Length: 200
Image (cartoon, rainbow, N blue to C red; front, side, top):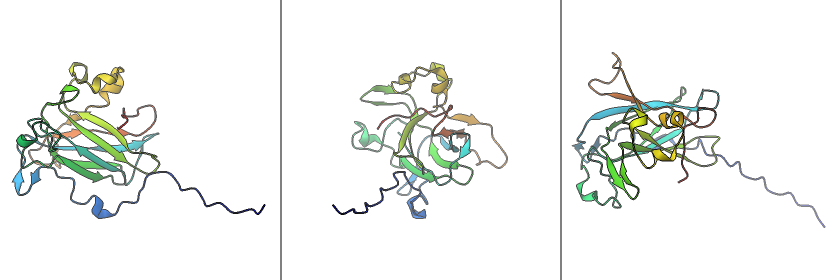
């Protein structure tokens, strides 16, 4: 029986294979079709790390969130007709060599879905080299973590892991955005301090 060379199996990790235009201009959620979003405008920024506190270059971070009244710009939201016409609701950013990403968005309002009442939050998705699938998590803005009640957060019994799902408001700095509160949310893709992720 003749021997045949088999084709090489594909390298099954994600990226980085995204062209620049895949991300460019997607970091600002605060204006849509010439209108400005209502509510408290903020900066949501942070760093993406792998195990050993190593920053990840060219990771893709996506967020989607409700507006300041807790309404998602999506037809499945029962209050879709009430969505803020100036808020886009979705954004995408790429990390730099230090693993940094940044979004200009608004502080989300409490919302409601099939799970019930939800605390103010944004959903987060990460794509990066070395990952075999996308990672999905949620960032919360209320504080302190122990006092927040949310059906997704309640899936995390460990209080230290719960705390890693909260963005922390940062003190104002001279080189920061003028009159915009800054919230920091770091993401760790694996290791001892791994961010809690969910199956999607």
